[in-house]
Length: 145
Image (spheres, rainbow, N blue to C red):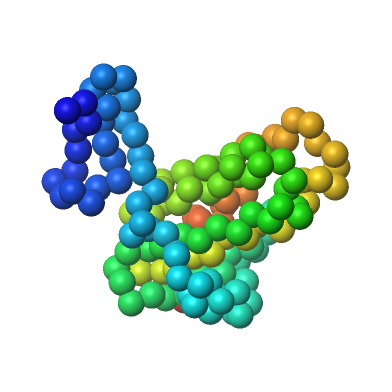
């Protein structure tokens, strides 16, 4: 086999690919919000945190795992490659901060219209900085939710 699981359990999100000499991270099903009921419950609630680009809807869940849901509307971001890049940025920020957050369901929603400015080259660093700032705030105030 070319893949070696780094963590002790089989549900780990980290694999080391020996052939390519790279670490691969997965966004496992345990870390996703799949249920439409949970999505609706999160959407009915007012955004817990927001800035110019994103809004986060947060509720406490019954699990110890923190889960993430994403809403990146085609209306706000027409190009599929830009939507996918924004999703990857959010998932990476979630992966880096998830060890500090326990038992929350977080729904991240794009508010900023990328089509409005007719951007050909979107500066994704703005998105990364914005979502990092929001996740740091979630860590600081996670007892509130």
